[in-house]
Image (tube, rainbow, N blue to C red):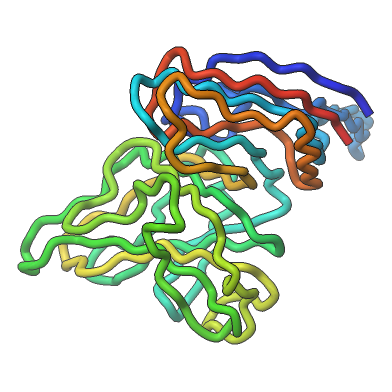
Length: 281
């Protein structure tokens, strides 16, 4: 194991546009291990992978945004620990491109109320996606597009709508508004009744599910495209005062899925700062 001391300004809310599925704009990235394989032609190819697993030994979050805001600190998860895809409540289509920088539609163009679902065998605290082509609403159907976020209920047989009181940041939920071309971040404190899927139609069993659902879409509405999605774990608190500090000298926050450190500042600010001591696993 190795100890890493981090002292960085963090000007973003969480993940900004153009950086998803890269190592850009992260306060710390796990060390990589390399694997070399020789193919049938005798050519050696070397691949580098971040080594997952880290422990947040201590941290300090300094709010310099000029406002009282929600803040947090946590980890991004390695891609093999989660999956996501389009979902209309009946049919699930896994989208492996969401774990790359390739643009992929997270809905179906037209009146189909498809959104997307994120799945993992552990409860996760945040989801971030880079919407690079905005959803459109032509108003031909007479209703404005809405979006809600739902989670698999305790029994794993139905859905419960996320309440605003459990969220720290949420730009995926909208009322009479499309998903715009920008980074969209969702951070929450998972409720005690979030259960693994048992019999939700079309979804694989045994996973915690978050459903980012579309509603009131009409025939000529265009689907949003995402160029990279990420999820992870996070400790968050509500309303840290301007120029205030939140710190834990003995956090020992252990995450076996971690491959990078992230922070949350609900209002972006160039002087916002995260200090951390991280032990790699």
